[in-house]
Length: 485
Image (cartoon, rainbow, N blue to C red; front, top):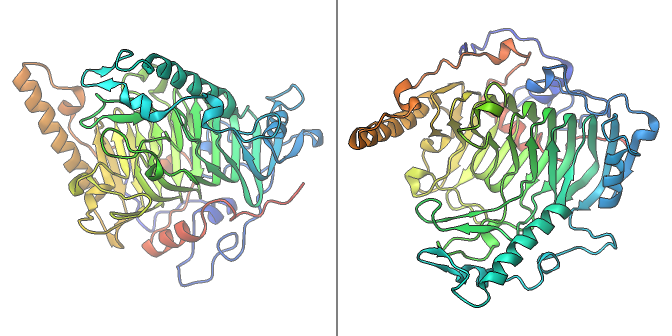
């Protein structure tokens, strides 16, 4: 059972954890490993906080033989290193130098939209929709356009998806290491560590339009920056996730008068993904940021799994899903959320402010614990309702969080969001003579039936100033010293 964390409650923290989360007062000198002293990232280092410490722990390629240590600077070298001379699941350490381009062809060319589907045109694609939906008969080119979109999407998948096998540590060298135009795939693998990289989300040039998705229709992009499918024991640390050079705000305008969505998630987890820790990372200017669990009907794969810790990160300009949770026991600890109504690249508008944005979403059969998070939302009409959204969940607890530097009752906001949807669901069931959904009959509770302190040791930050300082100055790629092997 979750208990509110009193400031005096004792917890034991490892040295690495102290460098990860525990900070001194913002006016004091930064602790070792934070701020003006860049922590050194060892190639054999294991996760020291969160759910990734459970189930045997997560140390990636620790213990790799010298011949299984690689330095890579292009796509071909990265793929060869991950293959590890035909033994991909044996321990390996992969150092990334510079930016690796997922759209790099074998001859070194960087592929673009027309290389994947020559002749495809998004305006022609949109012109084939009628009031009844898509029709090959709308124009003589519609059938070919439909086939080109599918071909382009499949070619993108084959080119840009890079699978990280089990027992792998990937470390960025210096301050400019990263991947772009790449879907980093963690698929049925385990014991993976990824640190000190900038990952620029792949652009889906062939995103599909669904006029019946929502009140205004919706775009559905196919590729995440990072995807976890049936993987477990994952530690992501000091990684910067971004749309980079291709923000959705610069995409062509769709039928709903808004730019096309050419990105899916920054880091999505589904199909039984488990024992994940995400620390000291940055999630920047993105729409669908982090989805845990892909459907309310996926209890067979997700129930009892999706145990994730999200600690000490910065979410800036993220419109939704930071995270949105189904099924999982998720600990959202000491993160900094920053958003502005009129941000020029990623404007954030809550439901109360005429949009759909939110930070935390608690969904079907989930148990979410929010602790010591700092939420900053500014601009005309900005209000605290943006903090939490209800998506058929019933259990949510919070302690010690702030909104615009002042303490905020996030549990009350969660209960209000639940109540609003509950009343609508009950009224609809009564009007239709049907049974109300289980979640609407269950009632809201802040008793989430588990306590992170009973699962792993940690020391939370307890002041707004410390959480803000950490989010602004100790997160993202380039904050670690990774020594060349």
